Amino acid sequence: MKVIYELSPSQIEDLFELYKKEWWTSNRTLDETLQCVHGSQLCIGIVDEHDVLIGFTRVITDFTFKALIFDVIVAESSRKLGLGNKLIELVKNHPKLGSVKHFELYCLPELEQFYEHNGFSSDVGGIRLMRLKNA
Image (cartoon, rainbow, N blue to C red; front, side):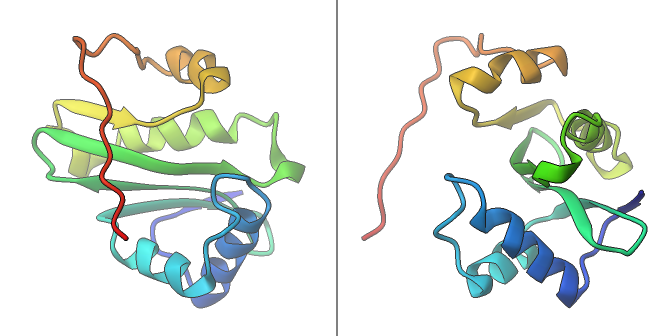
């Protein structure tokens, strides 16, 4: 396995295939996948010995106050190998994010324990997530 910070066109297609298998990303198109990869300040991938993408996450950040982590995803066949933990560690220890004050993410309740194990807390001082849907 190897860590990469730039995805080739075929690895973006691999990411799209990973997205299609998860309920939270299954409606994304290949074009949207390409746009979100290119619109993120930092992308981290893990590839297998054939350069096939098996793990991925991306970050949107101002490099000072906030780094919002998105799309922590590991191929089903590569789960239980610690790759999710590895992706989070790579984000937290990335040199470009060294001065960021807060790493934040969204997660389902059943994933809270995983993220707590990686140092995250749901105690954010009473802050609530709000959303405006763009029609």
